[in-house]
Image (tube, rainbow, N blue to C red; front, side, top):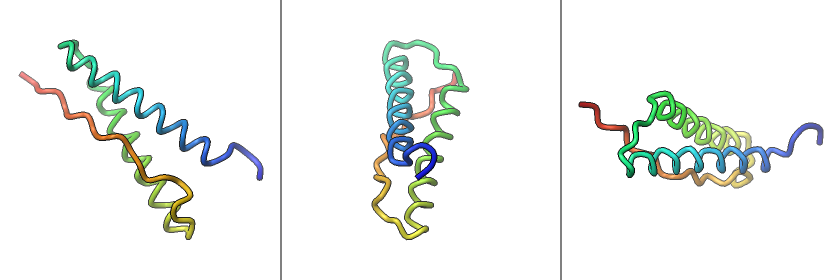
Length: 79
C-alpha cells in the first residue's frame, strides 16, 4: 500500500483531538481564556473524525477505524 497507514493516521488524529480537548478543559478549569478558534477547531476535528468513521463503514470496512471519539468540550459561557 502506498502512502501513510490509515490506522496510524486516524490514531494520530485521535491523539491530537484528545490533546486539544484536554488543553481546553484544563484552561477552563483554571479560568483562563480559551480562544474561540480553539473551540471551533475542536468542533471541526470531532466532525471530521465522526465522518471518517462513517465513511469507512459505508465503504464496507466496518470496524477498521475505531469509532471512539473523546467527549465534547462544552462551549465557554459568554458574558
